[in-house]
Length: 599
Image 1 (cartoon, helix red, strand yellow):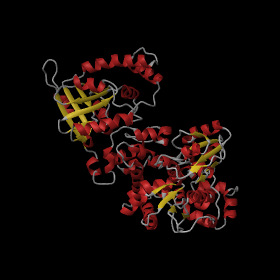
Image 2 (cartoon, rainbow, N blue to C red):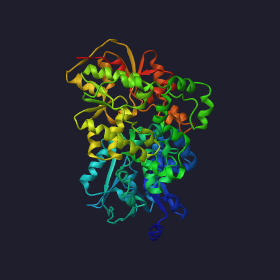
Image 3 (cartoon, rainbow, N blue to C red):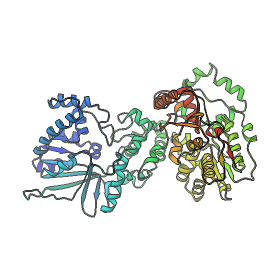
Image 4 (cartoon, helix red, strand yellow):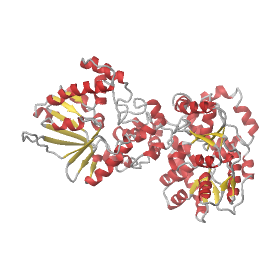
């Protein structure tokens, strides 16, 4: 590129926002060769003046205040400007207009490249992406090979997704289609060059990272990620940030670099649920983590936390002894040595036979896929699941040979172990699904595993059949109520209830419990917080990459719980209940305990 610019006697360049040029370090490279390169996106310009780097793929200067913008223009550009946004915009426009008119070349990225027509598509909410490439006699577009689409129809479909997912607009303010070469008013033809970047992309088409190439850079996964929203892109990422940043860093810089921040993913699944191109982000992140295990080894805490079912099974041999030990002063000094946070108490255990004694017989149409919490820690959940199933007219059968769902293994990148567990559970559950039985769960993470994870890590017709025949018990109740087969009793009309919808419930189905509680006559306050911050076993780990971050993520939920005051607190997730108990000192119950079905 340097040779090209010099052959055109270029000294000054205006550049539109481009993550691809950030990826290859183009600005620094050209500046070292003596070129003046000016970023013309307002956020990017502020970052350039500050010597900083983008924090967000759509809003690069989201970490700057308006006072920061004003200060930068005063100190770096000598402009007299207050912190009023309108005034800042006017000053930036005046300063940049001179840069546009003096530049001998323009560089931009590309949101899309239309192969059929040779068109460069740029999507911005500022005019710089249109003005910059229009004035100079030389225009260079730098884009990754994945940006190529076949025709205008394909481009239109992506643009429709992009604006809605990125900023909630039906279309961005400026959506520019440029088919070079452009001809100026004086008849001069602009020279155009397209530089396509590979940098790992073509290799990625052949491995587990291939789905990431469908990314349209909308930033939806960043906006929904609970840890990213607390930490920001300077901590959670490199050039590319957030959940998609883990994947793109793996492609462009390798999985070792990506695994330097992949632990910030708490496997909530929200990123996968909002991705407009349906990239299974959370699942691929688990694969990225698995590639890093060979280099870092397993931490003691991760070995313990992924062995949770084995530990539960052992401690349930004598629940009183374990419960006394885990709550005593003896446990506190041992936990940090094991990589666990002493502030997070292990939940008490109950004898599993009490759990099994209260379930039905095999002559049923419902199979209960349990989680370890209901099986070993809180059998009341299973007891109420059996009661509600009976009220619906079903027996509920628990196959005792089932094992844990496997979420901790996925959280820590132990995909092979998760795959082994998946095959065992699929083989067991398929026997019943093949006979026409439905699989019901009381833990949303278990449903997430059955619906989203097993079909991917252990693909088969059996896994697909189990996924399509699995639901939460609450969904089954709502289905029966909506069809008129039964109704809900209203024993406590007007009683105050605070309901928190868990991450995995949001990721796989519209949670039924809020509606069921309202139909039962409760006065429901539903939290709008997307994640409590627990992240399964994440909140048990010691330090910044565990308990501390977990409590920061949960802060908004804790505040809502405290504002709620007296009343019933409920959630269908076991880990959310642990988090709410620790962070807000609120004891919660499972929603099934508040429902009574009448036929």
